[in-house]
Length: 324
Image (tube, rainbow, N blue to C red; front, side, top):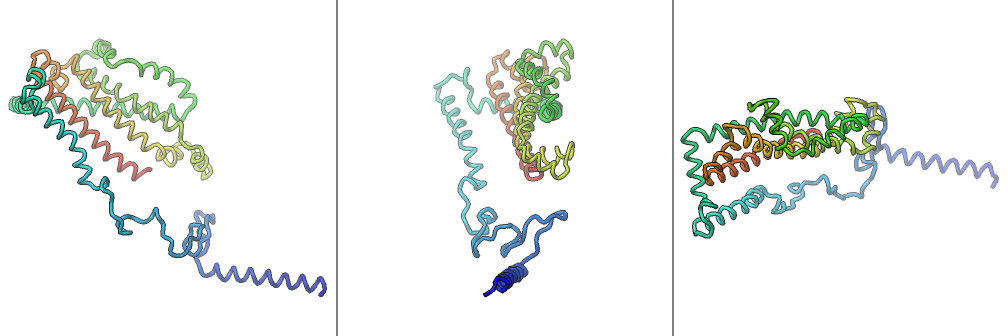
Protein backbone atom coordinates (compact mmCIF):
# COMPACT_ATOMS: atom_id res chain seq x y z
CA UNK A 1 0.00 0.00 0.00
CA UNK A 2 1.43 3.35 -1.00
CA UNK A 3 1.84 6.37 1.32
CA UNK A 4 -0.78 8.27 -0.66
CA UNK A 5 -3.42 5.59 -0.10
CA UNK A 6 -2.67 5.43 3.63
CA UNK A 7 -3.06 9.22 3.91
CA UNK A 8 -6.34 9.10 2.03
CA UNK A 9 -7.81 6.41 4.33
CA UNK A 10 -6.65 8.30 7.47
CA UNK A 11 -8.38 11.45 6.22
CA UNK A 12 -11.56 9.49 5.55
CA UNK A 13 -11.59 8.09 9.12
CA UNK A 14 -11.06 11.58 10.58
CA UNK A 15 -13.93 12.99 8.52
CA UNK A 16 -16.19 10.15 9.67
CA UNK A 17 -15.38 10.88 13.34
CA UNK A 18 -16.15 14.59 12.89
CA UNK A 19 -19.47 13.80 11.19
CA UNK A 20 -20.44 11.41 14.00
CA UNK A 21 -19.67 13.98 16.66
CA UNK A 22 -21.65 16.58 14.77
CA UNK A 23 -24.67 14.29 14.47
CA UNK A 24 -24.58 13.57 18.23
CA UNK A 25 -24.29 17.26 19.12
CA UNK A 26 -27.20 18.00 16.87
CA UNK A 27 -29.48 16.01 19.15
CA UNK A 28 -28.99 18.54 21.93
CA UNK A 29 -29.23 22.30 22.37
CA UNK A 30 -26.86 24.76 20.78
CA UNK A 31 -24.09 26.44 22.77
CA UNK A 32 -25.38 28.79 25.46
CA UNK A 33 -24.72 32.41 24.53
CA UNK A 34 -24.59 35.29 27.01
CA UNK A 35 -24.23 38.82 25.59
CA UNK A 36 -22.82 37.41 22.39
CA UNK A 37 -20.28 35.12 24.12
CA UNK A 38 -20.53 31.33 24.12
CA UNK A 39 -20.17 30.46 27.79
CA UNK A 40 -21.04 26.76 27.79
CA UNK A 41 -21.98 24.01 25.39
CA UNK A 42 -25.23 22.33 26.27
CA UNK A 43 -24.86 18.62 26.82
CA UNK A 44 -27.49 15.92 27.27
CA UNK A 45 -28.39 17.27 30.70
CA UNK A 46 -28.34 21.00 30.01
CA UNK A 47 -25.86 23.87 29.77
CA UNK A 48 -23.80 23.04 32.84
CA UNK A 49 -20.77 22.03 30.81
CA UNK A 50 -20.63 18.76 32.81
CA UNK A 51 -22.73 15.81 31.73
CA UNK A 52 -23.81 13.81 34.77
CA UNK A 53 -24.74 10.16 34.46
CA UNK A 54 -28.38 9.57 33.68
CA UNK A 55 -30.64 9.49 36.70
CA UNK A 56 -28.19 11.32 38.99
CA UNK A 57 -30.07 13.96 40.97
CA UNK A 58 -28.69 17.35 41.97
CA UNK A 59 -28.30 17.52 45.73
CA UNK A 60 -28.30 21.27 45.99
CA UNK A 61 -31.36 21.89 43.85
CA UNK A 62 -33.68 19.37 45.46
CA UNK A 63 -35.79 20.70 48.30
CA UNK A 64 -36.78 18.55 51.29
CA UNK A 65 -40.44 18.77 50.27
CA UNK A 66 -39.69 17.73 46.68
CA UNK A 67 -37.57 14.76 47.71
CA UNK A 68 -39.90 13.72 50.51
CA UNK A 69 -37.21 14.20 53.16
CA UNK A 70 -38.39 15.18 56.63
CA UNK A 71 -37.32 18.52 58.07
CA UNK A 72 -35.09 18.47 61.09
CA UNK A 73 -36.65 19.29 64.43
CA UNK A 74 -34.48 22.38 64.89
CA UNK A 75 -35.77 23.75 61.57
CA UNK A 76 -39.42 23.66 62.58
CA UNK A 77 -40.90 27.05 63.47
CA UNK A 78 -42.80 25.84 66.54
CA UNK A 79 -39.63 24.31 67.97
CA UNK A 80 -37.71 27.55 67.42
CA UNK A 81 -40.39 29.51 69.29
CA UNK A 82 -40.70 27.02 72.12
CA UNK A 83 -36.95 26.55 72.42
CA UNK A 84 -36.37 30.30 72.63
CA UNK A 85 -38.97 30.63 75.38
CA UNK A 86 -37.56 27.89 77.61
CA UNK A 87 -34.86 29.93 79.37
CA UNK A 88 -37.07 33.04 79.96
CA UNK A 89 -39.82 30.84 81.44
CA UNK A 90 -37.35 28.99 83.67
CA UNK A 91 -35.87 32.29 84.86
CA UNK A 92 -39.34 33.67 85.59
CA UNK A 93 -40.36 30.58 87.56
CA UNK A 94 -37.08 30.61 89.50
CA UNK A 95 -37.52 34.31 90.22
CA UNK A 96 -41.06 33.71 91.46
CA UNK A 97 -39.97 30.80 93.65
CA UNK A 98 -37.00 32.62 95.20
CA UNK A 99 -38.88 35.86 95.87
CA UNK A 100 -42.03 34.30 97.31
CA UNK A 101 -40.28 31.80 99.57
CA UNK A 102 -38.13 34.36 101.36
CA UNK A 103 -34.80 33.05 100.04
CA UNK A 104 -33.97 36.64 99.06
CA UNK A 105 -35.61 39.63 100.75
CA UNK A 106 -38.04 41.63 98.62
CA UNK A 107 -35.99 44.74 99.31
CA UNK A 108 -33.34 43.20 97.05
CA UNK A 109 -35.44 41.06 94.73
CA UNK A 110 -39.12 42.01 94.28
CA UNK A 111 -41.51 39.36 93.07
CA UNK A 112 -42.79 39.35 89.48
CA UNK A 113 -46.19 40.37 90.84
CA UNK A 114 -44.69 43.48 92.45
CA UNK A 115 -43.03 44.45 89.18
CA UNK A 116 -46.29 43.92 87.32
CA UNK A 117 -48.19 46.08 89.81
CA UNK A 118 -45.57 48.81 89.42
CA UNK A 119 -46.12 48.72 85.65
CA UNK A 120 -49.89 48.95 86.11
CA UNK A 121 -49.49 51.88 88.48
CA UNK A 122 -47.27 53.83 86.06
CA UNK A 123 -49.59 53.01 83.17
CA UNK A 124 -52.61 54.30 85.08
CA UNK A 125 -50.74 57.53 85.76
CA UNK A 126 -50.12 57.87 82.03
CA UNK A 127 -46.33 57.98 82.23
CA UNK A 128 -45.25 54.43 81.33
CA UNK A 129 -46.31 54.63 77.68
CA UNK A 130 -44.83 58.13 77.45
CA UNK A 131 -41.47 56.98 78.82
CA UNK A 132 -41.39 54.04 76.40
CA UNK A 133 -42.30 56.21 73.41
CA UNK A 134 -39.75 58.91 74.24
CA UNK A 135 -36.89 56.45 74.75
CA UNK A 136 -37.76 54.50 71.60
CA UNK A 137 -37.88 57.70 69.55
CA UNK A 138 -34.49 58.81 70.84
CA UNK A 139 -32.94 55.44 70.04
CA UNK A 140 -34.37 55.22 66.53
CA UNK A 141 -33.40 58.78 65.57
CA UNK A 142 -29.91 58.49 67.02
CA UNK A 143 -29.44 55.05 65.50
CA UNK A 144 -30.48 56.27 62.05
CA UNK A 145 -28.10 59.22 62.14
CA UNK A 146 -25.17 57.23 63.50
CA UNK A 147 -25.70 54.31 61.12
CA UNK A 148 -25.94 56.62 58.11
CA UNK A 149 -22.66 58.34 58.94
CA UNK A 150 -21.09 54.99 59.79
CA UNK A 151 -22.05 53.54 56.40
CA UNK A 152 -20.74 56.59 54.52
CA UNK A 153 -17.42 56.95 56.33
CA UNK A 154 -16.94 53.17 56.53
CA UNK A 155 -17.35 53.02 52.74
CA UNK A 156 -14.77 55.77 52.27
CA UNK A 157 -12.25 54.08 54.54
CA UNK A 158 -12.90 50.62 53.12
CA UNK A 159 -12.76 51.61 49.46
CA UNK A 160 -10.06 54.29 49.51
CA UNK A 161 -6.51 53.75 50.67
CA UNK A 162 -6.12 57.51 51.13
CA UNK A 163 -9.28 57.67 53.23
CA UNK A 164 -7.97 54.81 55.35
CA UNK A 165 -4.68 56.60 55.97
CA UNK A 166 -6.33 59.93 56.84
CA UNK A 167 -9.31 58.78 58.94
CA UNK A 168 -8.51 55.45 60.59
CA UNK A 169 -6.02 56.67 63.26
CA UNK A 170 -8.27 59.52 64.44
CA UNK A 171 -11.47 57.50 64.48
CA UNK A 172 -9.70 54.63 66.22
CA UNK A 173 -8.67 56.97 69.03
CA UNK A 174 -12.15 58.50 69.34
CA UNK A 175 -13.71 55.05 69.44
CA UNK A 176 -11.79 54.28 72.64
CA UNK A 177 -13.47 57.15 74.53
CA UNK A 178 -16.07 55.79 77.04
CA UNK A 179 -19.67 56.84 76.54
CA UNK A 180 -19.95 58.67 79.86
CA UNK A 181 -16.94 60.82 78.94
CA UNK A 182 -19.01 62.49 76.22
CA UNK A 183 -21.87 63.47 78.53
CA UNK A 184 -20.43 66.59 80.23
CA UNK A 185 -19.01 67.86 76.94
CA UNK A 186 -22.31 67.42 75.11
CA UNK A 187 -24.19 69.11 77.94
CA UNK A 188 -21.85 72.12 77.71
CA UNK A 189 -22.14 72.29 73.94
CA UNK A 190 -25.77 71.29 73.35
CA UNK A 191 -27.31 71.83 76.81
CA UNK A 192 -29.68 69.21 78.25
CA UNK A 193 -32.20 69.14 75.42
CA UNK A 194 -32.88 66.38 72.92
CA UNK A 195 -29.86 67.32 70.80
CA UNK A 196 -27.33 66.16 73.39
CA UNK A 197 -29.09 62.84 73.96
CA UNK A 198 -29.54 62.03 70.28
CA UNK A 199 -25.93 63.01 69.55
CA UNK A 200 -24.66 60.66 72.25
CA UNK A 201 -26.80 57.81 70.89
CA UNK A 202 -25.59 58.56 67.34
CA UNK A 203 -21.98 58.32 68.56
CA UNK A 204 -22.72 54.93 70.04
CA UNK A 205 -24.34 53.68 66.83
CA UNK A 206 -21.67 55.13 64.55
CA UNK A 207 -18.61 53.13 65.52
CA UNK A 208 -19.90 49.55 65.13
CA UNK A 209 -21.21 50.34 61.65
CA UNK A 210 -18.08 52.23 60.62
CA UNK A 211 -15.71 49.55 61.89
CA UNK A 212 -17.46 46.51 60.42
CA UNK A 213 -18.33 48.11 57.06
CA UNK A 214 -14.79 49.38 56.52
CA UNK A 215 -13.29 45.99 57.37
CA UNK A 216 -15.79 44.11 55.18
CA UNK A 217 -15.20 46.32 52.13
CA UNK A 218 -11.46 46.10 52.63
CA UNK A 219 -11.58 42.30 52.46
CA UNK A 220 -13.91 41.77 49.49
CA UNK A 221 -12.62 38.93 47.33
CA UNK A 222 -10.18 40.32 44.76
CA UNK A 223 -11.33 37.82 42.17
CA UNK A 224 -14.86 39.23 42.36
CA UNK A 225 -13.51 42.73 41.79
CA UNK A 226 -11.41 41.62 38.83
CA UNK A 227 -14.41 39.82 37.35
CA UNK A 228 -16.51 42.97 37.72
CA UNK A 229 -13.85 45.12 36.08
CA UNK A 230 -13.55 42.58 33.28
CA UNK A 231 -17.22 43.22 32.50
CA UNK A 232 -16.58 46.95 32.36
CA UNK A 233 -17.83 47.86 35.86
CA UNK A 234 -16.14 50.64 37.79
CA UNK A 235 -16.86 53.26 40.40
CA UNK A 236 -20.45 53.34 41.66
CA UNK A 237 -21.59 50.52 39.36
CA UNK A 238 -18.84 48.24 40.68
CA UNK A 239 -19.81 49.14 44.25
CA UNK A 240 -23.55 48.49 43.82
CA UNK A 241 -23.14 45.39 41.65
CA UNK A 242 -20.21 43.57 43.24
CA UNK A 243 -18.98 45.08 46.50
CA UNK A 244 -22.29 45.90 48.18
CA UNK A 245 -23.84 42.42 47.67
CA UNK A 246 -20.62 40.88 49.00
CA UNK A 247 -20.83 42.80 52.29
CA UNK A 248 -24.62 42.80 52.89
CA UNK A 249 -24.44 40.18 55.72
CA UNK A 250 -21.65 42.14 57.42
CA UNK A 251 -23.56 45.41 57.07
CA UNK A 252 -26.69 43.95 58.66
CA UNK A 253 -24.61 42.50 61.51
CA UNK A 254 -23.13 45.94 62.02
CA UNK A 255 -26.60 47.48 62.14
CA UNK A 256 -27.74 44.98 64.76
CA UNK A 257 -24.71 45.70 66.92
CA UNK A 258 -25.18 49.43 66.44
CA UNK A 259 -28.80 49.18 67.56
CA UNK A 260 -27.73 47.40 70.74
CA UNK A 261 -25.14 50.13 71.32
CA UNK A 262 -27.81 52.78 70.79
CA UNK A 263 -29.87 51.34 73.67
CA UNK A 264 -26.77 51.30 75.89
CA UNK A 265 -25.94 54.92 75.11
CA UNK A 266 -29.59 55.87 75.66
CA UNK A 267 -29.34 54.83 79.29
CA UNK A 268 -26.11 56.81 79.66
CA UNK A 269 -27.79 59.90 78.19
CA UNK A 270 -30.98 59.66 80.22
CA UNK A 271 -29.23 58.84 83.47
CA UNK A 272 -27.33 62.12 83.40
CA UNK A 273 -29.65 64.71 81.92
CA UNK A 274 -33.28 63.76 81.44
CA UNK A 275 -36.70 64.27 82.98
CA UNK A 276 -38.47 61.53 81.01
CA UNK A 277 -37.63 58.13 79.55
CA UNK A 278 -36.63 54.71 80.80
CA UNK A 279 -33.19 55.92 81.84
CA UNK A 280 -34.81 58.61 83.94
CA UNK A 281 -37.11 55.95 85.42
CA UNK A 282 -34.03 53.97 86.47
CA UNK A 283 -32.37 56.97 88.08
CA UNK A 284 -35.51 58.25 89.80
CA UNK A 285 -36.41 54.78 91.10
CA UNK A 286 -32.90 54.28 92.48
CA UNK A 287 -33.04 57.57 94.34
CA UNK A 288 -36.47 56.70 95.81
CA UNK A 289 -35.63 53.07 96.64
CA UNK A 290 -38.26 51.66 94.26
CA UNK A 291 -36.51 48.47 93.26
CA UNK A 292 -39.68 47.15 91.63
CA UNK A 293 -39.58 50.04 89.18
CA UNK A 294 -35.86 49.45 88.59
CA UNK A 295 -36.61 45.87 87.57
CA UNK A 296 -39.48 47.12 85.43
CA UNK A 297 -37.21 49.56 83.56
CA UNK A 298 -34.57 46.87 83.00
CA UNK A 299 -37.15 44.42 81.67
CA UNK A 300 -38.65 47.03 79.36
CA UNK A 301 -35.21 47.90 77.98
CA UNK A 302 -34.54 44.22 77.33
CA UNK A 303 -37.90 43.68 75.62
CA UNK A 304 -37.64 46.81 73.49
CA UNK A 305 -34.07 45.96 72.52
CA UNK A 306 -35.14 42.48 71.45
CA UNK A 307 -38.11 43.78 69.45
CA UNK A 308 -36.02 46.30 67.53
CA UNK A 309 -33.36 43.65 66.94
CA UNK A 310 -36.05 41.34 65.54
CA UNK A 311 -37.10 44.08 63.11
CA UNK A 312 -33.52 44.39 61.89
CA UNK A 313 -33.48 40.59 61.58
CA UNK A 314 -36.46 40.78 59.21
CA UNK A 315 -34.64 43.43 57.23
CA UNK A 316 -31.62 41.13 57.10
CA UNK A 317 -33.63 38.33 55.48
CA UNK A 318 -35.04 40.73 52.91
CA UNK A 319 -31.64 42.34 52.16
CA UNK A 320 -29.82 39.04 51.79
CA UNK A 321 -32.55 37.69 49.51
CA UNK A 322 -32.51 40.86 47.38
CA UNK A 323 -28.81 41.71 47.16
CA UNK A 324 -26.72 38.79 48.36
